Length: 360
Ligand SMILES: C[S@@+](CC[C@H](N)C(=O)[O-])C[C@H]1O[C@@H](n2cnc3c(N)ncnc32)[C@H](O)[C@@H]1O
Image (cartoon, rainbow, N blue to C red; front, top):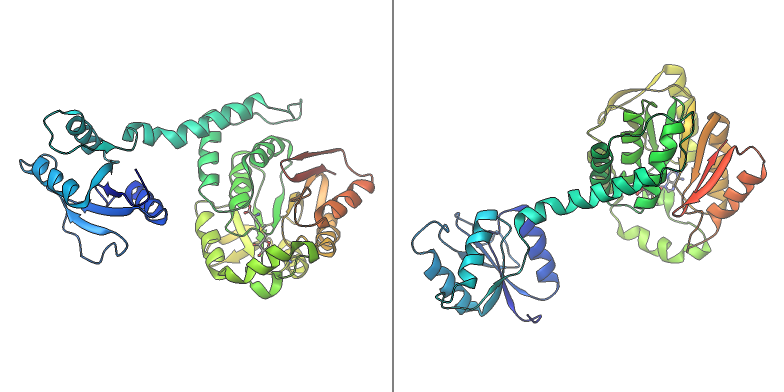
């Protein structure tokens, strides 16, 4: 198969086909998008539309052979189990007049792939249990951890699976209270925090983020590449993505503001007992933070201000997490984190992935 080759995607109208066809097109393949259903001619402007009869129809084999010949196709992507099975039989038959192969594994294997990966991570997570002490609450079942992994990895963001594993551990040693996250973007780490808060009965998650370019542009001199890229993101889209990512939870809310502005609003919300939003309704707030995740502006002055403004609200035994403590684009989180450690109030401190975890 070369870049100029044509690929047949059949049927085009299922989600796996859409993702595969897009990647193939981006790689320079000519994509022939076929369906047995009526399809508007302009439905897939980047692909060549084609009609094929249902595989159960008498003329299917002849129509397929004609399509393969016309476009010089030698590879077919077929994510539907019955169609995949039929095409595999045809391509292995000496009687079928055109040589081709089915390029994807069995759709049943495709179905299991992301679940298998999730269960492998969940098993690693249980085996790497590093915080289990008398005070830890019981871990979650494998199926629950696998569900967390799958949901988390569907959300765009920069938090990785090593950090997720550490979060599952510390959540078991987190007292009831609020979880506050500074910097949520599309809600990847917030999803993990909300999930763990729900199943370990910790409390509500408050996500603080302006989702607004003017508030976040400058992250320090060393972060010039990140500063330069920021204007090309549509920050309202990131907010909409966040709201959708977290919409399955009833223990989440947000303050659309910078960390510095939001702290006073959080205090007022604690007095009122809740935060209201159109997307999440009324969310109870205690004003006692049991886990603070700082992942906003990474300039040294900003991270230090985040720590100074929010740390007084973190209850004894609570956690403060500094994302990007190990960072290729600057040393803001490291300097602020080292200052936090130097205050001497840490019961526990460790790094996992790029994040500093401190229990105060
Ligand atoms: C690295 S992203 C957060 C990633 C997110 N935690 C995840 O898991 O994908 C940084 C976020 O911080 C937000 N941000 C920047 N400056 C901020 C500030 N002063 N206060 C709160 N959030 C801020 C940005 O809008 C951006 O969404």
